[in-house]
Image 1 (cartoon, rainbow, N blue to C red):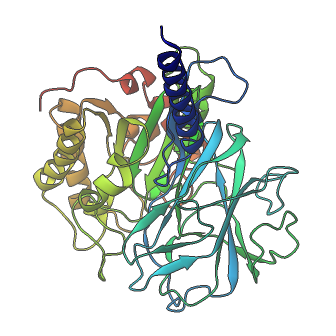
Image 2 (image 1 turned 180 degrees about the vertical axis):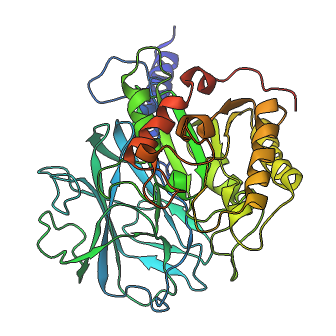
Length: 435
């Protein structure tokens, strides 16, 4: 080979090496929150770049605009406490501005492990600053959401996370989830990366702005998304104990041999109905049909869906007494999931005899809906919460030990019984049933 030709070949080879090295360097994190193959490979690991996947570890549904928050929380830090279902080596969050008519500007956000359950203090060495498109701030338009860039952090399963945001100026009504069953915190000023919790003197039973946390996991294979009402929201479970039925389900999925390695994403809203939205624009407490895409189908890594809905359509005025209408709505949810290749497990409606809204006429509607669900053609598989929770002596009511006291919502033991009633094999997928 002539010397000049050899030099040209070597130069071309060097240029290729530089281009490849540059591409790998730039590819660590993309502005849309996704990672390419270079970022997926842990440093110093010989594992293939494809090992691992993004999966939701926690979620909640934006339920309404928080009352009396037209100016938002200007000049305050909000530290949400949330509980993981699976762990991972990286994390990213989603913030929602669904219920504001004004842009929401977050100038500082962070993620950390809690030093102790339900505690605003960060565990040593875990505080991470969050960015959005490689910027430390983000402005979320009205009605929209934003996802952060990934950060590296070893996140355990069944752990409490601290997700903190700071808003410097008035931003309109706050998008929130009112029945968190978890204490979160507020502090005056920008205390976003404070590792001690001393500035967080105000406690709150709400989650604000935060609607999802995803992790990069080599253990979980996907997520099961649960859409439901106050029973899924866990409104009567012990606050701070993570005793919703979805928490008990997550425990089963983590610990039982042969269980699918799924996370659990809770999209319950207290008072939620299949067919009817709440008031205001956009509607607070949106119907399951109107929020199914946002709260279930768009969640990260969803492999299966569980539907626990219908009681409020019957109990809440205006009472829906047409069982066929409720069943048609439930079937439409299944059809939407099928369009995404997802299998759906649907629940029968639990007893409510003794509740202040009970009447024989409404009980008859519940029985009709349950008969249709059990007979097939509504869901792919059925979890019989009615059978799991009812009193064997008087089946129209909850078993006394499973009754929280209002004759509608389960106790902690009742929620555990619900999680036990679900056949985990039904979550593993397979061909969708013919409806």
